[in-house]
Image (cartoon, rainbow, N blue to C red):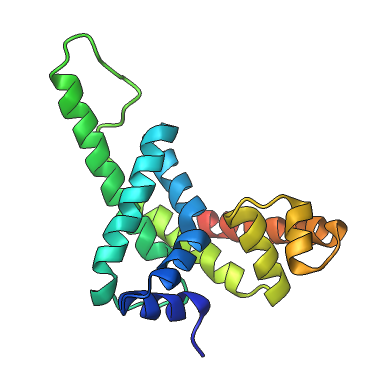
Length: 183
């Protein structure tokens, strides 16, 4: 049975823009936070997030989604785009005598890239184990930024159900992240 990401990826690869919009909605927040973690700038993170999805759209027809989630692939594209942005910043700063940013990392370490990709895959796998309702609550609240009440109305459940289930999901995901980091 195909996962939602696999179905959307196949449809988007065939040129279906609405399927690609669904992939975007499902993964834009995690991609943004990966970019923000590397770049430390909300504006640059927004730009890199958009660049990531432009590259993904262009490369999707030749992409074969092996796992259940497309997030690890998007995270890899994001890291490359962020590394390009860092190189561009350094070039720009080299040409500006008074602009020096010591907070700017010299490189994006390969180890950090592997850890980030593994973590994204672990989170995606863990989300895949959740009940359908919990996956929808996670998608709406964590990925799309819905308020609890808005998610409750969208799903036809109470505010308390959303709050309680999301709390359990976050605890479960924190445990998975801790396991992945300790491994």
